[in-house]
Length: 173
Image: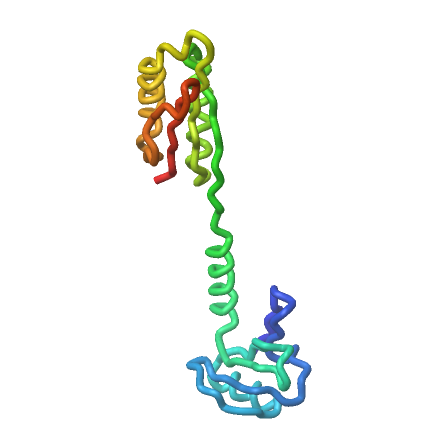
């Protein structure tokens, strides 16, 4: 059996285990008991697997007979699952008189946020005489929101929150 270097410093493998006695667990979860480390290594070699120190702080340390390559793969996969992205709320502001080029630029930013699994609040501030054109603002928000229906879904449709503010909320699909 060849020596394998552990990539994680907290897991000693095979001959790197420096305890005299270990609590041995087989790969199917059966507890063998406290045995000398040499006996544990020979049991691991008989099955063609590795002896991995799972709990080094225990007294005696807990070692398990398993395939170290699979063990590392599963741990890496588990860590990757835990690194799931936390969703943040991002806000993009548009205006009632914003030109098409600027809307396209902001639409690209919204798409980036949705692809990064963020929620996006699209808001429009109406000022002065624009407040009288609330229906136009709602219609512009609807047409702007249609650009994202393939990558996101509308969590909250366009609505007037106050006399001068219209908002819409998108979440990633």
